[in-house]
Length: 125
Image 1 (cartoon, rainbow, N blue to C red):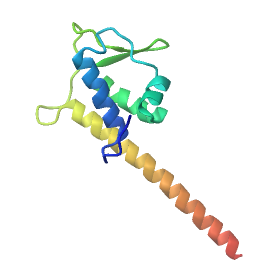
Image 2: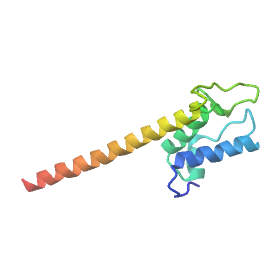
Image 3: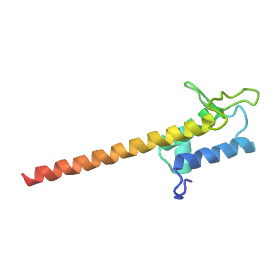
Image 4: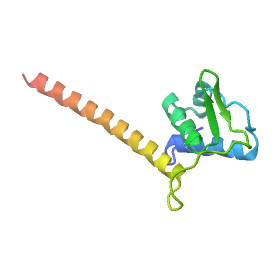
């Protein structure tokens, strides 16, 4: 379950899934539960779950197979890395996801404000 700690839900879910993978509860080659199952398990939206799984993909912990699902990466497979020693790719990927989420949230808020202003102007006429 995602907790109201101030930490984004998708990061909480990614942390939990990462712990399950590293702890062996999700073994190499094992499929992750479906997005819908994870959303129900964590009481989160599908988009939040997709962002969490995206983080794990960027970290190289899971691999998506088109039409089949997402699987824990086999231990003999080497994850792709990027970034620099000062700023690992995983940090960059998490930051990009956070920025995209913030932009989407701000866009939705702006749309609501514009709608309210538009309604307010119509009611004055």
